[in-house]
Amino acid sequence: MTDDTASNGRKAGDVSAEDIRASHADRDEVVEILRDAAADGRLTAEELDERLTVALNARTFGELAGLTRDLPVAPLAPVVPAPAPVPAPPVRTGPPGKDIVEINQRFGTLRRSGPWEVPRRLDVRMHGGDVKLDFTQAVITHDTLDLDVYLSIGGDLVIVVRPGIVVATHDLAVGVGDLKVRVPKAAWNEPTELRVNVTGRVRGGDVVVRYPRRTLGQWMRGESAL
Image (cartoon, rainbow, N blue to C red; front, side):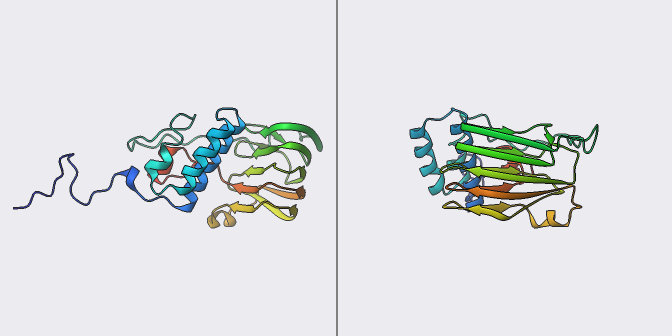
């Protein structure tokens, strides 16, 4: 009789979570984690280059997970029950928000996240840095946001949305970089809560529109971040 159980207790043919093959989307997700960590000063330029090289050539989840173990994201862990749903953020509450907000900044990273109030118009001029607008918990008091941006060479624009927020980028000029929209097709059928009309120019960086990034625990379990 053949013993099909290996010395580690797994049956022949079993594959651990870390040995599962990584996809292009998985590699891209880790690349974004690393870039955010470098922008926050957690990684030096040399460390970022080294880890990006490994991430882009990684074949398994285990190789990718090792790149973020010392960063402030959830580590790989056994499957546990999903946490209770987070209450939906406030929508259209309180007095009307500001009509126009203008931001002019040099270097660094411009971030808007948490329960920030979305104006009717947001003008952003960033010289030598990145812009990240996270609408996941934003307080929305208008149906539309006119977002006009100018990013100099090397700056990226990242827009994080939740269901019901539509981003139109057809009037945005992108130079050398790429425009990436990573919103599930199922979200297209959601009632529109806010339409973000993006205009302006991004000279030498990427423009990314996506849902919130999952923790590594959610990623391994195939769960959504929302």
